[in-house]
Image (tube, rainbow, N blue to C red; front, side, top):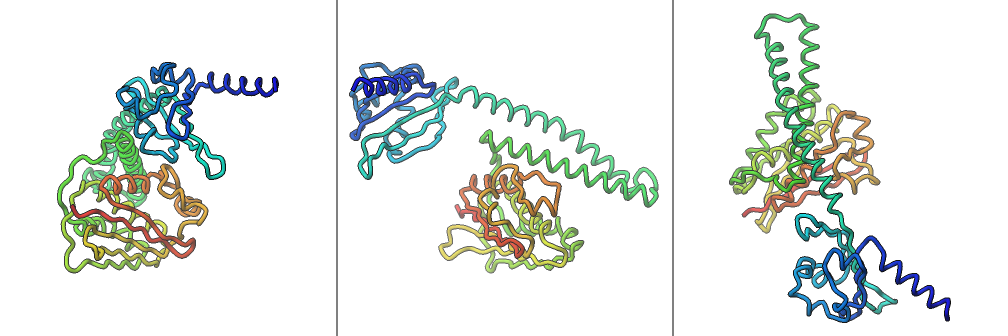
Length: 349
């Protein structure tokens, strides 16, 4: 019996001195334990023991996390809550069960203020560096294009070929910097800048005209099903939706073999609350084991890297965030070796 008491004491001491905050509730939501870290981070006092959370709503530190304690009664893992400028917590909630019986709830949280601040500083550095790089790199591109266009005099065939290769490399750098800047804006929550009612059909036609030389170079059979009647205008950030359409069409071109097929369609599903864009190719497809990571930042499928070594892995990450920021959905179907279809919707507001 004495050994059992020592085990309980050791367990209590371990909980008490954990670097994470720990709160234990019984089956009716009464506080039966909280450790020193909770006292330090939330300002809770010993007299709170035995109180129901519902009786503590007047506490500022309770109000800030009340949605975790009350609304998300089942399970929450890793929700980030900003308590104040100098305190950010990652909170998780786990039900304590014995078989099917719920005996209570364990709430634990970690102070991630330093981690969050370092991440913010990193984003700010990347954003500033990318902004500083974009201007000179764009100027280099302009200068090379001036030479290619022979505005400063004639060129030999070899000089022209070299300059075109340099220009293409410079353009890839410009696209990389733009992707980095857009990613930084997403993570700062400052992504949609200017929304207007605009035609999705007009955007698709603009992008197709822009990419037509690449389509023709690879002799791809492109089919574009225009909607009839015309789709209604959609409230959108035009430049961002243009970026989505360009990314999806470029990917279809890049990962479809010469002589392949691409089919693009625009429609409005029967419920009439959204417009639907789809693009199907008969390219390399996406490996089954890698599909869960397709919209992840910096991810590129293994077969895509073999076919097209250059690429940032940011395109589909940007697409997902842009579409979801507009209240839409994005998804895909794919079979390795047979092709991929990407879809996205935008709500009609």
